Length: 375
Length: 108
Image (cartoon, rainbow over all chains, first blue to last red; front, side):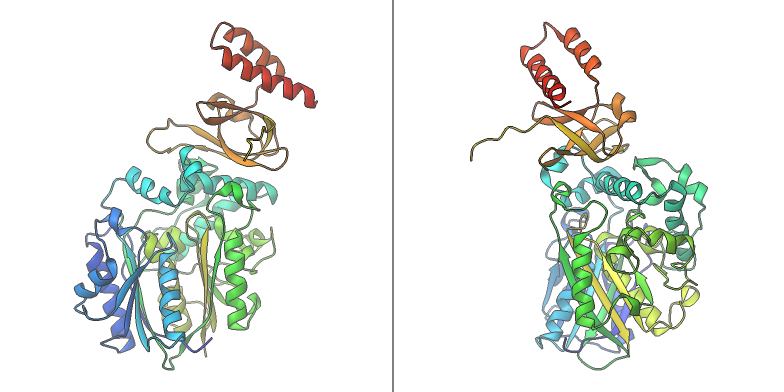
């Protein structure tokens, strides 16, 4: 692909925040612009899942551009559910790769905690096939159906699955931006209340506010966008071929690896979509970072821990960093940039040169894989 | 397109019991993904008191009530008992139970 570089990144604290959506987006954007040393950009792409319902804000692109004092910069919004941040990054990268823009600001966020939890769940369930929704299926319900099928097929125990949130909270403990800063134990996970059997509260991401931003440029910078891939699948779970893997991730990964000219073996750090923590294992297998059914082995052996062979979710992941739905896909990319630049502080992994971010939209009906490299 | 008649027997591919169901549904809400012979898959509701019997791969009967599909793990004996108790109720319900019972029986 034509060269696209990440010139600067920014991210707000994630959690239950007082600030409304626009100031959150602006905080992340200004941090990224400062980091890039740029005042103006050719294009602004805003990612958010559903600001209309979460906050009442519409036409987020120009609304945000005006708020930022750049009303004359072309700006639009990109939406692909819970992977909107990654989709916005894809759109801005595409514009630069095509030569339509020399610089672009990508910003993504969501403000979710103004609404009561049942209302948030209702808004999130708009990503579900209408027929399945008619049966009361929620995101956790469908994720639980997948988790049970995956765990039973590969003979995983409850304790093994509980190691995932324990690991990700341990990383979040070292991330000052994370929603959850406290460590948890396997017993905490297994004693937390059932949300959708077998998923328990500590295996499900929180409802969070937050925003992330990145400035892209066609000019040479240390971190390069090496590969981008999108993959899709039926929205309805009942139409999927497999219940133990996600075609949308496999396809996105295939495209991203091909564009980057590398294979999974080159990846040294990964941020994957653990909104429901058992998905972390499925994702690693779909990305080719573990063989089918073997991801649990890497987890149990500590290979995916911060100090392991392939650190996964050093930020704490969606589970511990938090999941402001539109922001997460871009926040993952921001974390990879910090890791590649050696700026990840207490959660820095050992000098990675290639990092990967994987974002799931809906129940894996529109997924993205982004590969970044430090040349 | 001509409507097709599908067998009222299927296999549980996976399931959950939802403890935080959306508005309009009572907890706990069993939801199963079921595959019929021939490969058609769909979500079904379960009966709460039968949820303990669900297993992946378990054969279940499918019943339709008011446009919603339900899985049933009732045994033949329980089914006949149910028909007996329901006698005198809506004729259509009995017919549908007899129909699933008969199909279940025939497959053995």
